[in-house]
Every structure is written in C-alpha cells, then in structure tokens.
Image (cartoon, rainbow, N blue to C red; front, side):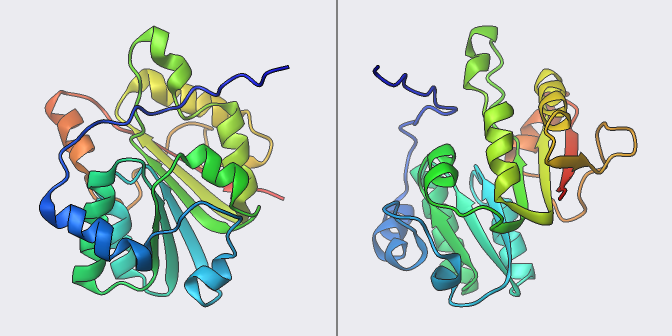
Length: 225
C-alpha cells in the first residue's frame, strides 16, 4: 500500500534573502550548518558533552541567538525551514563568535524522527508556531499528539518543554495535547498556563500580536520517568 504523504506544518515562502544572508549561507553554513544524511552524534557535532537546548522554528533567531551568547556552557541547536532566518542567525553567530550553536534547515518532524537520538535535550523551545487560523488548515498545526510524543522522547528525564502562542484557540489545543501525553508533567499547579519564562525576549511575532491586541499563553512541561 502506498504510504500517505504527511501534511507539513509549513509552506516555504519565497522571502527576500539579503546579500549578506546569502553570503552567510555560502560561507558560514559549512561550519555551523548540519546537513541531513545520517543520525547525528551530538557529542561529535559539538566536540564535547554538555547540557543541550533545541529551538524549533527559530524565525530570525532572536531567542536562540541571545541564549547561546548568554550561556556558552550549553549547546544549542536551532531548526528553521526559511533561508532568510537561517542566514540572519548565521550572521549573528559570526558577529558574536559563538561556538555552541548549530543550525538545521529542514522539516523538524523529519529531523527528530530520523536523525536525533532519544533523550538528547535538556530543553526544547517552540515559540509562536504558525497557528493556521482557518479551520480547514488546522491539520497543518505543528502541535499535535504525534509531534508532542516525538518531542517528549527527545527530552532527557527532567528536561523541559516550553511553548508559547498568541492565538488562544491554538493555546487551548496545545494545552490539551500536552496534558494528555503520559511522558510529560505540567509545571503549572493547575494543569494550565504558566508565567512567561524570564529568559524569553519579546520576538517580532509577539510584538505584532500585541499590536493586534492578542494575549500570549505560555506552557511548560517536564519529562517524567
């Protein structure tokens, strides 16, 4: 039987890539970018053993770039499908001389499913994924049961999953899906939302939502045993 094609959570946009970003893709990608070919040995990638944090859909890299600069003792991996954002983060790596940050430009589902070992990360961040507002597009939303199960398996015991969205119906879906996962325990005493993580800067997506009058909902879960 022919395997059904998985619906992707993103559509590649023909966004403008600046000359500097294109130069970064050419010159810096070989050093800081990871190509998808075989499962990764992250100890080899970073040439050390350390705490590790993954950000999925990092956009322009505001969060992961800031964290990698502030915490050189932690290794960071960012996954993003849009070349402009990848180029921008590569330029930030060069400017700040970061050695603890690597980038993958590929579908996060395939990356986690095929190339990342279980219990690889101490923290996973998913901030403001596309909410796919229209009902007919809800099937494209990234946060659903299969993906959260995949994420939970990639967290080390005691590792933390953090999410945020400025779209309340999506926040409610995130809450229901994550609360239903047996590998995750909410950090909210009421099995609800949590306060914004102190380290999380206000991204351009969040600022846009604030201008539109949207609230912001944060969630946090720990990987149990």
